[in-house]
Amino acid sequence: MGKDPQAVSSRCWFTPDFQFGIHHFRYFTDDFNCLPHTHGEHNFIFSLDHGFECIVNAREERMEPGDLLVINPGEVHKSRYDSNRVASEGFTLYVTTRVLENILRRMRIPFDGKRQSIKFHGKIHDPKVLQLVKELLDEWKDQREGYDILMQSWMVQILVYLIRNRFQPVILENKSNLPPQLPSWQMDWAIEYMNACGKSDFSLTELCSKIGISPPHFIHLFKNSAGRMIPHDYYNRLLIDRAQRLLQTGDCSIKQVAYQLGFKSDSHFCSLFRSFTGMTPKGYQLQKTQPAFATSALPPKNQSF
Image 1 (cartoon, helix red, strand yellow):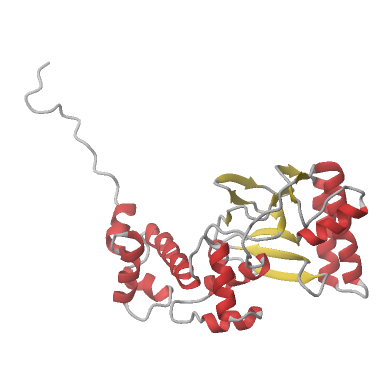
Image 2 (image 1 turned 180 degrees about the vertical axis):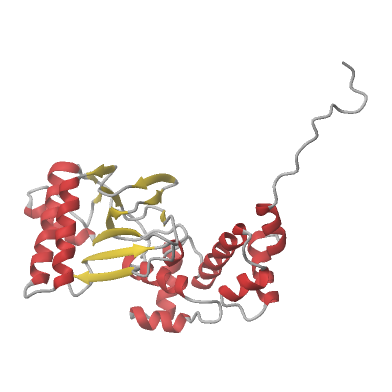
C-alpha cells in the first residue's frame, strides 16, 4: 500500500488582518512533525478523520473524529500524527482575543480584553459540530458565489453554539502577560516548510518572504513561541527526530538516512546527530533495533540449593 497522495494544508481568512480564519489539513507523520510551542490566539481544533494526538501542557489528548479541543494562548502544545500511509484530517479555527471579545459582547457576556483574559477547558465530542464543519468544507471546496460570506457566518454560529452549549468560558481578572508570539498560522506555515525541506534546502530568507515578515522580527517572535529556540535549532531538531524514526526501522543505512534528509555528506549528518543525541547514528540504530541480550537461565556460579 503506497502513501495516500492527497495531503492538504489550506487556509482561509475572514478578516484582512488575520484575526479570524480557518485551516483544513490532512497530515502524515512527516508533513507536520513539531516540537512544543505556544501562540497568542485561541485554536479550536476539530478531528475529522483518522485521529491524532495533541499534547497540551504535558497532558496527552487522543483526538478521534468528532472530537474538539481548545488550545488557549500561552499553552505549550504539540501535535503528533500517526502514519505515513494514512493521513490524519482535521480543521482548526484561529480566533484572536479581539474577535472573541466582539462575539461575547454581542452575546451579552461581559468581557474586557484590555484587562481580562479568557480560557476554555476540556475536550468535547459533538457530532452536530462535526457535521457543520463538513458542510463548511464542502462550501469551501465548491467556492460558489458568496461562499466566503456563508463560511464566515457558519464559523460565528459554531463559536456561539460552543460558548452557549458546550464550553463555559473562564474569564480571569488578570490580563495575560504573554510576550509577543508568532501568530499560529505563521508558526504552522513555518513548521510545514521545515518538514518539507532537506538539510541543504532550508532558507530562513525564503521562509520569511513566503509568510511576509522580516527575518529579525520572525526570529524574535519565533523564539518567544518556541521556548527561546532559534529557527535553525528548531529545524535541526526536527531533522534529527525524523532521522531517529528512520533509524529505528532498521531498513535504512546511515548513508541512506543522510541522503533522504538532504545532507551533502554522511559526516555532517553524523556530527549533527551526535550533537543532539550524544550518540552516533549507528550506535542509536543498534540500540533501537538489536534485541536485548537474553540473560542465562542458569543459576549464578557457587549458588547452593
